[in-house]
Image (cartoon, rainbow, N blue to C red):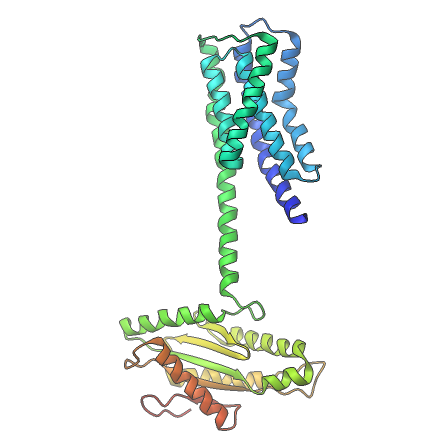
Length: 352
């Protein structure tokens, strides 16, 4: 309910300023069409209220309502009803009536789509019927120069106001879309790329290395005995260790290096334009730095990393083959005692 109320308040705030502008300059168009007609004094008072007070009343009604969105939808229908009333009261003077009714229709389509547009037409018909009951069904085909000039602000300024609101909304939607896209690519615990996103980038980097015949190295990083850390000290401590590793990766890697959480306690890194020997030095520094991590609540806790490296080779047929080479190097590091960096021996032997 709080989420819906927040959206409703935001909706009311977006409508508020355009309604002030639209009703204010719209009342000028109506006044120019009413001027030649013999209208009672209360009509002019009602026009002043509708043109300069209703926008503020409507805003208070929506923001103070239990469900602001529904209240603002009702206010838009009231707007349409008033528009129909003024179109009929001015005897459907062509330019004034078309300007008022078309702007109301544009409002409803922008705010609620087809459904609100159709409901708005019905509300306009109610307003027309009310005016006809009071003043009779009359039509005036004459358009004076005064009415033309009076409608110009409505035809220029109000569409600009609506366009500004739509543009601001589009910007916000674009920002939200980018934020959601980033969230969908990010591991929530570590803030690094998630498994799927990192694999996608690996395929891209693989094809780039193929096409440009460039260097790149991938690293698979495993926290030694991580299950034992979770079992002994709990998952909160385990999560702290994972976050610490992600922090060290950000500190020690270059801006264009791509780090991700491959799954569980395993991390992965793509190091573009970096030969295997240089990558081994970077990962060795990482291993030593991470080995110095101490948890303030558990000073006896010790952590270490096993790391497998594989550089790009032209003989690799796909990215999976490249990744498998790094995985074999990681397995060899774990099998030979852990807490070490091991490089792939495919297709020729390398030394760490």
